[in-house]
Image 1: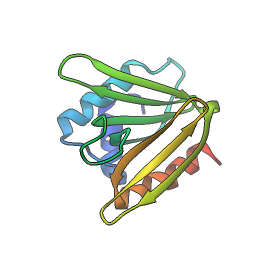
Image 2: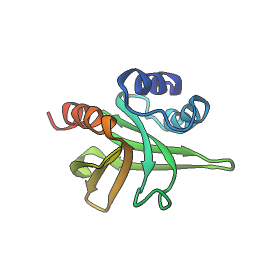
Image 3: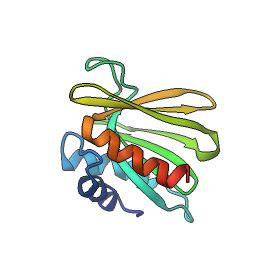
Image 4: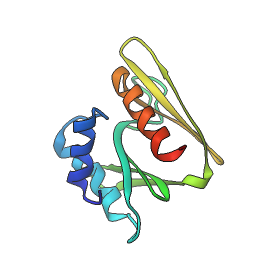
Length: 136
């Protein structure tokens, strides 16, 4: 996968989150698409609330792509965009926890730890794929 539309459709087909709307989901993935290296391939993608602490304290929806080299996190805003990158070799661990209707996936890296909130069902789907593409 290299195109924003492909990444968004992959999320929907695999139940890896959808964000607020298809239009905004594709906009978030377009940030990732523009920043892929020429020889980089997206292995899996998902959508969730970045830096989630509570329903009122988070950085909004981001698109996430795990590639052959990095974890890319992209967010299109009304004015501008955000891009965050973690090299796979700097990823220590990925853990998950669930509640009644939602859950968090926690990425522990050399420099920081961040939480991504997704629906309860998506936690299991996303974690299974992350472990398949990153840790196997």
